Image: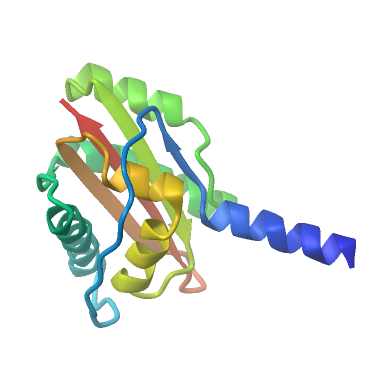
Length: 162
């Protein structure tokens, strides 16, 4: 029984994992969306929900920055290949964005298994660390949402402040 409880705790911890070098505020937002039809539309839904949450809480919208996508895509591919979510090598992604996107600060949210934008964003908002990243003092962001060969979704969302 202890092993089952431990495994459950580890799975929950992994699903609600995040990374940041910033701390900020908390609150909540909501909107209902359909299941994704393709990755680009799905990613746009997620980014729009994240910005809606920010504006609903008096924060500025974040701008999409293409160079961030190079890092979210590579990390999502890495997680799919590994078969697990992680923040492995986040410092490398952060360094790359500092050098190539003039990022002064960076944060990252990752997730696995959510099948629509609203459930993913709700999970992140209901997690203190993820919500701090979403509501952080950032100016730009981007996301990659990709399915593995079995159809399970993996996500990497990076925020930067210029």
